[in-house]
Image 1 (cartoon, helix red, strand yellow):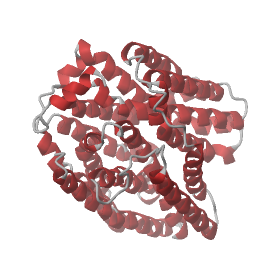
Image 2 (cartoon, one colour; image 1 turned 90 degrees about the vertical axis):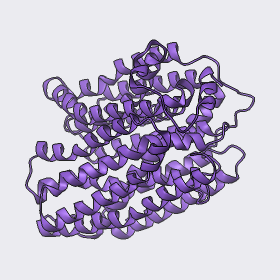
Image 3 (tube, helix red, strand yellow; image 1 turned 90 degrees about the horizontal axis):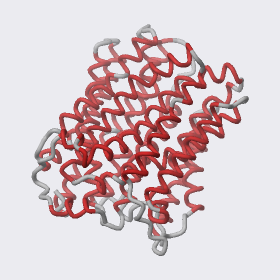
Image 4 (cartoon, one colour; image 1 turned 135 degrees about the vertical axis):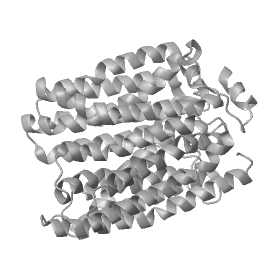
Length: 479
């Protein structure tokens, strides 16, 4: 327990007297920069690498391995996030963050100095493992480093980081790749990681590890979960529809069994109430997983659709795609500025509703061919995330017991990544089964209508989980 834990427990949940300016005061400034920089490493690295990778493939060869560079990073980021809470308990947050950052830097340098694509793949694997732990622990440290009245502001600050990454990431990486080298775009994360390590040494206390209470790492369950996610990702690159279905089915079985075994284990990775329908923590984690899963259809196909169905260039299509990130950040900042904790919890339920509405409008845009509906839909989807994500994340931390708060906090970015990964594979499977691979515009439009319609209809489940989460939390006396 830190000194801030007492502050958290003593504050009344109905009001929030925190001010944005407090994040910049000496007491919290370094903590704010540290956590935002940890998120920035994850966000900017994603955009830097996705922009520079095609050029790296052209230079090194191995175009067939391009998708694996993304898959390995994502899978090991998820595994890293799942181990973060256990590592924090065993070795302390400070040492865990420092080692994870070093692993990230080693992976980055392997990619920077690569002479062939297999070296890039190993580098991406290490980058994912290191950054998965960093991102998860940066969430876990929020309630330890800040009083509860400032937690919404911290999430608002992190939303600004994500929006900055969405805009500046491709721009900076593109400029470095074009004028210097793709290696420069990879390397730019190294100085940021070095600064992050320095801040961790200053901010994160040395104490905190409790080796005598730490459980052994559940390597078998982690390997099974990683295998399940990997099979889902691999299925997206398989041409045969029947083989895709087989891989997705096997992956689903592996993941379901892994969750059931984890619930019975003496050293669980997930919170005990994870994915339960009768506990606010369980239904809330469903929302955390489901919203990225349904939104990922736009992340995968919106730019492609804008280019091939509306004839937009890459810059215009990318700009319309970025509307989602803009509104996520703007709305998140607005929500974080609301002083009433109770009001933030009430309006949180609107998040999944706005997501479903935005997806429905994207379906209408594809059906009618009306372009202006696309930025409207993107704005609604971004607003849905902005209005609920920070509040929902804080609620998940609040409804967790003291012994499970680290596991819950670490699962938030991990589940978000898993939602995107699984969603990308599932929507890819549906698109391919609908004839997406054919080049004819009408065939593409037909496939996109099926994919976006499926996502919009299924997103109604996120609304149900969101409403139930608030009701259960209220019944449990948490809000």
